[in-house]
Structure formats: structure tokens, C-alpha cells
Amino acid sequence: MTPLCLVALCAIGGDPYPYPNTAPLTPPVVAERRVPFFLKPAEKRLREKVANLAFPGAGKSAPCGSYLWQPAYKEDHILRVPAQPYTLQPGDIVMSADGSVFWKLMHNLAGTSHPTHSMIVFAMPDGKMGILEGGPHDTLKCRVLEALPHMFTYEAEGRVWVRRRVCPLTSEQSARLTEFALATNERQFAVGRLALQLTPFRTRGPIRTAFVGKPHGLDREGYYCSELVVEACVYAGLMDPRTTRPSATYPRDIFMDHSLNPYLNRHLKLAPAWDPPARWTSWATVP
Image (cartoon, rainbow, N blue to C red):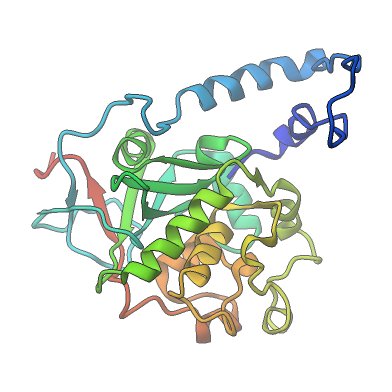
């Protein structure tokens, strides 16, 4: 998820010119869009964060190991022994919590808490495991990244959990999940709709969630992180489109399998198709 102070940056990279179907004989002169001086530090930090993402083929550091500790519906710091080797598979849902006071406060204001990030594992066309996330590391797009190197970066900032898929996806489900991930790669992070979660106009409410916040599939121009994960699951046939509410779902709802929202508490149940959340680490011994 992305700090609201970066909303203004969304317009900077926008396309100011509606290109025609055929190229003009003389290329049009388009005025350069300058970043206001007070936004330049934020733009620089944003560019640095994007450059450091674990894009496929970027050669980012991968962890030396991959382990899951014993699962529990707890977002505490306890490592529940024993740890077991873990191999990612399509459909696994990854969540994380960093030390950001800003995001902890924003989630508390929205009526939720840790974890604050969610993403989903899928099979890339070359067979390697990729991960799809909306706004990774406070950037402004949905991204397809290398799974383990990306998880490694979140481990460096805080805690990472995995809800492992109990039954492997069918070939059709996996193909649909890959199709969704590749189609939504580079779409915008839905900063505006995320901001609505702090207002009375949000899709999450004790009554309204039964009627609004339904799946949109690939028809959205942008998504926020938990919305993207749930939309991906619906598109792949892993969640029921009739009862799923992507834009009313937060990472903690996915993590806990229960919610303060009455509608989600009845209908959003990942178990038994997914294991309870388990801490993921790149090492297997208690510090």
C-alpha cells in the first residue's frame, strides 16, 4: 500500500496526449511535465524503490533457504517450532507487516491492523514462481516480481506469513491465475479508492458490503493489494464470485479467516482450501 502523500505523483507519469491511429508526419511538440519542487524528494525516493524491486531477470538476491514455521491465526512475533522447508506453489497467499507507523495508523483508522500487505504466488510462463502485488514497497503500480527475492525484501523489513494452498491448483486454475497476473501487471495502484476506505463512502460496512464491492475481474484500471489478491482468486476460480467482495477485503481478513465486517465474517473463509497463516523465514533456527 502507498502513502497518500504520493497521490499527486500519479498524474506526473500520465499520458498527456491521445495518440491517433496513424503517426503524424511531424511529431507533435509536447510540453515537458515538470515535477513541483516540493514533490521532487518523494519522486526520487519512489524511483529508487521501483529500481530496487525484484523484477524477473533483475538478479536480485534470493534467500539461502525457505521455511515455514507452524501455522496459527496469530500475527505475533513468536516462531512456532519446528520449521519445515517450504516450496512455493501457485495460489499461495503471502502477507507481511513492516514497522511503518503510518500504515499501522491508517489501517487502525480503517478498522483493521496487521498484516498490512498481501500478494499471491503464480506460475510465470517460464515455470518459475512469480508474485503479484499491488503497490509493493509503497510504489504506485501493480507488479509481477520474482517470488522468493521479493519475499526476502519484506523479511528484511519485518514479518512475512504464507497461507499455503492445501490442494495444488488444477492446470486450468493455474493458467487463469497466470493470465490475471500478467494482464494486471503495470496497472495503477488504486490510491483513490484506498483513500475512500477512511470515509463513509467505502464499500465496507455492516450492511452495504452485501450489495457493493463485488468482483470486477480485469475491468479495473487499478487495484490495491488485498483487492488484487481476492480478484485474482475469483478470476482463477478459487473463490465464489457471488459472495466475494474484493474492494471490501483487507489483508487482515485474509489472514485471520474472520472479520469485524459481518458479511465477510460469514463468507470469507479460506480454510480448508488454504492452511492457516504460517511465518515464513529464510532460516530454520530460532535466533
